Image 1 (cartoon, rainbow, N blue to C red):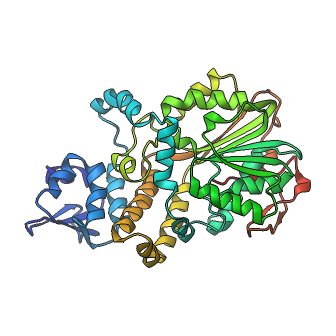
Image 2: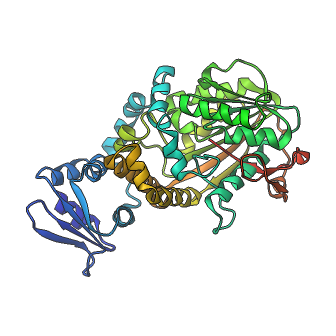
Image 3: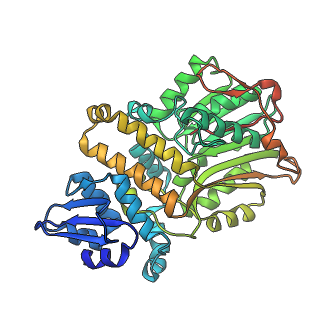
Length: 420
C-alpha cells in the first residue's frame, strides 16, 4: 500500500526507501535520491499507509523511521511539495462536524488541561529557542534580514499601532503568555493592562517581569478563562496566539464576550493562525502530542460570528510566509541547544519537538496556513479612515527588558506589535 502511494504521489524530487526486509526502492525522478529513509519494524509501512498524518511523526519520534540521507526538513519539504494542493476527501468532509464537536469542545476544565499540556512545559525550554521577550507567535519581518528579536519587536509595534492607544486607557490582553505584549503596551502609552492566561508557568513569569519592570501598579496578570472576565468596559482588547485554542464551537461566545467587554469607542485586535482552503480538521499527531483541543480556522468560520455580534471589521491583514520564517529560526535555535533540551527531557522529546517545528513550517509553506490580524470596533469612526497611520515612522527606545518599544509621547499614532 505504501509503495503504491509513493509511486503515485512523489513526482518532483527523488525519495529512497529502505524497507524493513532490506529491499531498496526509489520514488520520483530518476536521479540519486535527495532523501533516503530506513523503515524499521514489520508494521511500520502499513501504519504509514493507513494513517500517515499520525504515524509519520510517531515513527520519527520512536526511531522506526530513520534518515540515512538528508534531514527531517528535507524529507518533509519533499513530501509536502508533492502533496501540496490535495484537498480533504468526501468522507472527511462529511465527518468534519462530528470530529470538530469531539475535539474542539474546550470547556473551562478542558481548556486549562489543554493549555497545561503545552504551555506549562519548562520555561527553560522556551528560553532556548524564543527571542529575549519570549514571543511565542508569528514575528513580523519588515525586512528579510531582521533578526528574530527585531522581527518580534516589529510585530509588537505593528499590533500596538492597530490598537491606537491613548494614555489612561484600560487594555485587556487575552492569552498574555509570558507578559511581553502587556508590558510593551503599558510602556507605549501609559495605560493600564490586565493580562489573562490559563498557564500557571506563564503567569508566574509574567508577574515577576511586571514587578522587575516597576509596572505592577499598571499591569496585572491573572489565571483566568476569557469567559470569566467581568463585564467591565475595556478601551482596548488584544489577543495574540490564543484564538487557535478557542475551538469553532466557542467562536460565538468569544466574539460576544469581546463585544460585551469593549467600550463604545473601543478597538480590539485579534492575531491568529488561519487556513486558506476552508474548514478542515487538526492533524491527529498535532492533537495528540502538541496542541490538544487546538484548531486552525478558515476565515469563513470566523467572519460570520463577527457579523452576528454587531462589531465593525475595520481592518483585515494577512501575513503569509512570516510564520514560516519564524518557525525556521526557532528550529535552528533549538537545534543549536539540542544537548540542553535532552537534559531537560530526552531524545524522544527532541525528535517530537523537531517534528512539530518542521511540520508547522511546512503548513505555512505548502498547506495554505497564514496569520490573520483582525481589527474590530463598535463605532464606525473608532479608527482612522485610511491605513496610513499603521506605517508612520515611530521612534524606538531601549526599554527595561531589552527590546525596542514606542516613546510614550507618541500615544495616539504608535506603531507596535504583539506578544503571547
